[in-house]
Length: 515
Image 1 (cartoon, rainbow, N blue to C red):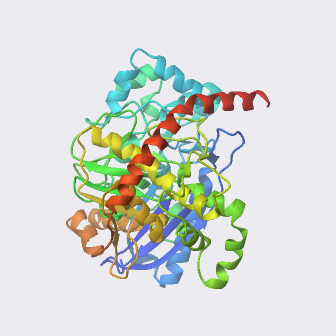
Image 2 (image 1 turned 45 degrees about the horizontal axis):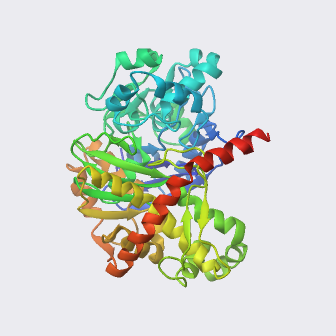
Image 3 (image 1 turned 90 degrees about the horizontal axis):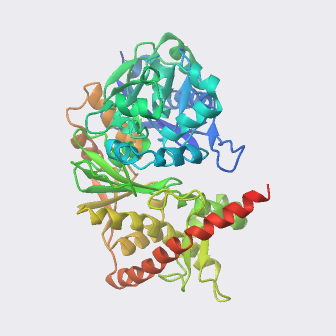
């Protein structure tokens, strides 16, 4: 064994990001590989899981080459991936059907059946999560009812991170942070519940072994070594939910600390020590031992990308010439508007909404348009609307007595000072971006480094490792006047969002009837 460097792999919705770290926690090289989801039906969102593995192999080879490391310099591999994703595989971990990811909402009939069961509330209490199309449970039932041959032939039903771990090691596992997608997971007892599985109709012999995130589940096999260019025998951790790794990498190491993920899949995660059952929100294990995450999941983070693609051709063209990103230019333009976007509100439900609405039919809305509305107002309204969507969930968490000791931001949105200040003003709390010594953000890879370094014995404490790697804080203080304005605007936002839910459903029904 050489330097005992750590490889971290983050399998996201639209790309895989791989990094290699020195034993003392310095990122030596990073690479990413993008891919596209397949949407053969408006409610479907799927991908060939083999594409993930190809991206993993390609990015590993890139970072190893960039860092000029030998295969025996790697002392451990950490990984995370998107949640609520179903990957049916055979005994060789070969996918038998496209992976249905968290955006897939095809299983609405199966969800309705689950919710009609007399035991529905018991299932929700068992896993501390609602019954919704986004979760894995309805997807399993959809597979059983519509692809019975695949269901029967499947050796194991894996989550996305479990699939990557299986490709590395040949072992079939599911860590605790991913298990919340199954409504036969006993979140308190950390085990599959036989009675719930039988009720739903899922054979437990097709379910992987449950384990903590940092458990070394196996080593790189001969086949995986050939495909990745690594050495056989490198230890691999079980892996975890990407949001949990991201929360850790943002600095959430203690109860009360909270992370907001500002990306395509936005939301927040509040670290707690006790199980909270709130069906409007999401609940999972944290990667920190003895901690959970009361979480929210929103889909509005891609709204700014939609604006860029549809109306930002100029910014896209000139950004490279200015050595900036199109988002930098759009953010600067948003700053030309005022708090409240001159009376314009935006509902960021471009692909339905997860928490707290749990609606497949909700859609994006600009509310308050006038002839005085300018592009800057549209952009600021998008930013404010995405923050309101998160704040909607924070208010619900506070109903359970949950308090936030430190509000930490992560993801691409933290690159925009305008957006960060909007969030501080809306939440009425300091919005903090924890940073590395070089000023860079922590993120998923840093969290994975700490988890893997702990698993292979490089560090003794996960939290201390993360805190040592995030010595700086960039803080945005809330404006009391702006917060007061946003409190009033939020009531309008919330009222409009609820009032439109029946109309969203009617619009969807009418549009479907034209197919």
